[in-house]
Amino acid sequence: MKVEPVNSDDNPKKVANSLGWTIPSVMKLLKEGNLYFKTIQEKTGHTIFRINLGVEAFALCDSQSATAVFDYSKVTKDDGFGRLKFNKNLTGQIRPSIFCNGEVHERYRKFLMDVFRATSVDYLIKVTNEAVEKHFSLWEKSYTGAGIAKEWEMDILRLCSDIVHRAILGGEISSEASHNWLMGILKKKRSALGVKTKFFSKAIVGYAILTNGIKESPHYQSMIKLADKRSVSEEEALNNILFSILFNYYGGCSAAFRTCAARISILDENIKSELIEDIKSAIDKYGGLTGQALCQMRKLHSFVLENLRMSSPVNLIFGRAVEDLMIKSNTGTYKIPKGKLMVANLFWAHRDTRVFDDPLTFQALRFFNNPDLKNYLYWEAGPFSKDQCEKTHQCPGRNIAIPSIMLFSAYLLLQGDYQLGSEPQWTGKKIRRLGTPDEIITLKKFKYKSDVTVSLPEAVLNSKLKYDEMTAENNNSQCPVDSEA
Image (cartoon, rainbow, N blue to C red; front, side):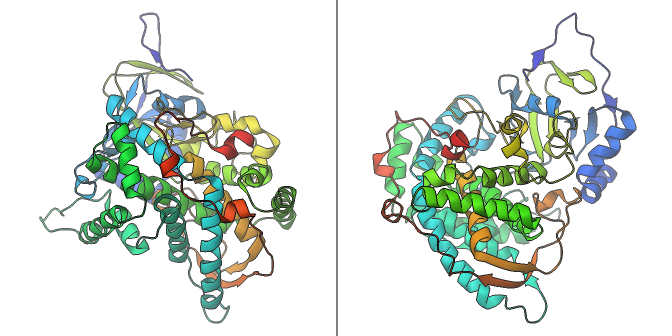
């Protein structure tokens, strides 16, 4: 949807005021999560309304209105997400690309697209295969079925960390340092009493470990050469690499990995069989697991997209109006004044009954049966179907993010036989869980079906990172899976 500026002939509806006092409102948000938005929507009868999230904002709660925050000719980005601001002490005082606008964003984005394009899907497959062999074997030894179920999430995070760091940097970096940095990036340095918070204390140590690890990675100098071509300084490049790898790629994929693992555990057996057959037939067609084979796994692709629809790692997307705007929604047209903060709730945009049939039900093949629904699947910077280019704010690493989630899911379906400690539940109340089940995922038993072989052709086994082949003129970063599936 194109956001329209205000004209004298426009006659918008009055925006319902539901601000309330800050502390009680924040407490309701923490307790009710996305359901807090639904309560206000039902009370006011509007899908656009004012809300207090610790900061005053205009909530956009249907598919049509949510797109307003993605029109960057009319909207600008702040240094964080509503009341949560990123800690510049953990980014070398550099404002990362995700929070930038205009010329600075374009420079950073061009550079990051170059970095992520150096990873081919074949190389990602090679890295994932090696990580799966290592971690699945460890899981089989750790989760034997004896005794009580144990937390599984940190083990999934370690697997994701191995894949992410090797896929981009060509080597491993401490998963503990990555986790500690991520836990502190949206936290304040000091408490109200002036004491350094425990999150920051751990995160700043993690920051030092991570930046040193990036500098010592085998392709760091090649990355800096790419940065120089894009007029990005070494300090800007280092901290944008760090933020994009950890906050965007690792942060998003580690949440999606956990969600997909939980969903697979409760999938209908017939659907699970269809997904496995989809994977096997593509592998057989191309003589092994390759980028081309992954592109043909359209049912698996649909399964991943449905997970992102139902359990988006980021539910609240913020943007600030740079002029008076008219926003259309399911309940009418509303005026958003210049300078006001807007928040699109993707949880409810992805459950819009005007777009999605039976939206509260997980349907693994929803996007396989109706590929056009990708036009209404949003993530942090716009519709999933929108092509990447330097001018957009689409995730610069999307070319490997979706394949990463697909590969993890494929290996779990083929080679993982596991039993969770309890059935996962999603109520929509736990925003801080990033789309994962409400409660921490526990695992009772894991069997690594290593006898189910996943063959990799020589081209995949010999694949490498391609930093030295990258040029500033090569700008195509469209995800190969997206373009085919």
